[in-house]
Image 1 (cartoon, helix red, strand yellow):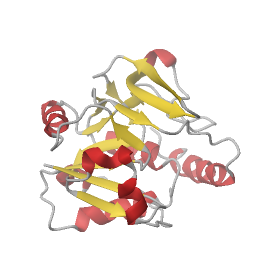
Image 2: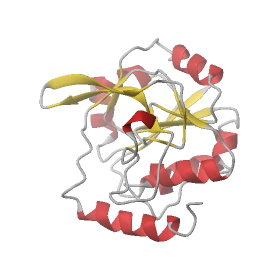
Image 3: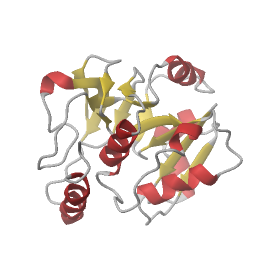
Image 4: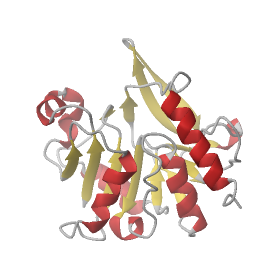
Length: 218
């Protein structure tokens, strides 16, 4: 089974009226609407949700992605997740990473990247091929992270990373605990280009991240 977990600043009505979310309308979902809390704080609530079985795949995803190829019950996504060799599954990531500024998952060797994501911005849509899909990674991008609830309870998100670096921190924590991370071929379009350069909250988050992982990166 799959359970989608999404935080959005939109109202519930506005979120579901967006045709980009048609593919998950009839699926099991936790939706945090008009959300002002950090993503990690919201996501961690799922660990204590007794209504969700430990074998259920939690999919933590951004509120601005669209699944490009889906069945009515998204059974093909479940099949991909169940067949995956990885404990933590993403769509784009890297198998080589070091702690340096700017702290981004893709501030690493281009040859070590993995995955594919479509992007849409200002009326244009294009595919971004990061590298071979199915590669074991150290980090995957937070636009889509799938993990079984039983595994998730052993990792959790660090709530001090509210909207940035939560995904990198989560993956590094999973990696240190011995869980495998990698990409699979689930085609989505992301309606964002992820521009962080003018965001003061991003720089505050980066400082917190460096303070934490400069002591724990090895």
